[in-house]
Image (cartoon, rainbow, N blue to C red):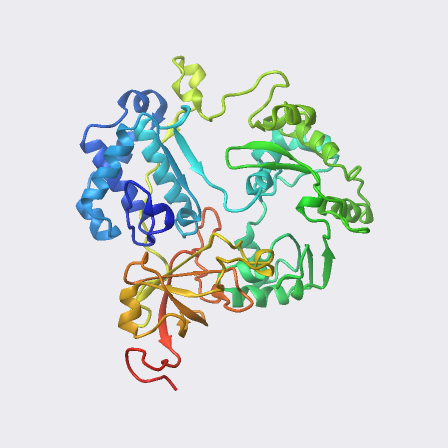
Length: 502
């Protein structure tokens, strides 16, 4: 387990590597260095299935475990133990979530992990591989359908003329040949005035975006904002038009794709209230008002259209998904199924069957964009709690014995140095803004590290603090690495340290 915090998962891990926030690439480089130095490289796989190994090996040659310890905070002996365990395991997976990707080097962080899998041949085999665990329900399915600025359904590149021609033949409309804007680029375009209208469906960017003060200012300044949602979110409060998607997930039919690419049927469990429409019905009705016939608002009809435009889904008939209890893509055939894991071709004996080799990536480490300083000495990292979900639009409306509202979690050492007690309200200040929150002492935090979530934005607007720096390759903001200071507001009777602030 690699995590700055000693989480519940870390408690039962065989190894916990307590990494400093933002030091993922130095750690990966040091693990690679140790694998190479110990002679544990899967040389046969590297020779026949990869490219760029020499350049990669030269890059990590100086990243000894001792050098990495100075950059990452992970003891050199733990780096060596993790490297040897991973390289010698008969099967091994690398799984990650937003702790890897929500950095300005998020894509390069992932590529550094891919390098480790290639180095050891832990890819293209059953039980081994790379597994990005999705953070929200059906994020994978959204990407499958083409809800990405540079991809058509089935992850076909918008810039691919053959893919565009295939889609245009079914849709009966031209597809722009250039990539669209990701979310970060949309906000940049709002700031310059190039984007003047926005349609938001099932998302709450007024609360979920980094530097939330800026995000709300830009959303409020649009000429026209439409929000389609089940609840009146903070984004919906800014909208010119709110379309109440009154049919919830348990009242709708369709499909969902999980993190292992398995498409499964979703069936309505209860009947929607009279007059309620689900998202699909609303979109079809709006298209009709705009003069475009999308066909009936029927999930199976829409799915059959997807099968015509996406080679990954061609063989996934509605009845077949039902009969098999789910099917993983790619599934180009209506009679056969592909292996449950990807990239098995890399192990083929015939070079023609192996296809394009897998490249090693030479990636450089860049530290977090928001540096620590005497005025901002504590590293704040954000995340989720087990009982809550994202901006809390759904979960905070219901009680839970585990939910205690938003807090700023501090290490015992930092709490003692600051003279603050559990439950005491403090001010958390970054270079962008400040919030007030009660203190919670977390023994799983090391000195110099604080933790907060974005679940309770109505009470504690955590994303007023987070930095707007983004990964230039993915557009993902650096939510995980904000520099803050903790200010006392008033000391409770008997609390340690100083006098109450004015």
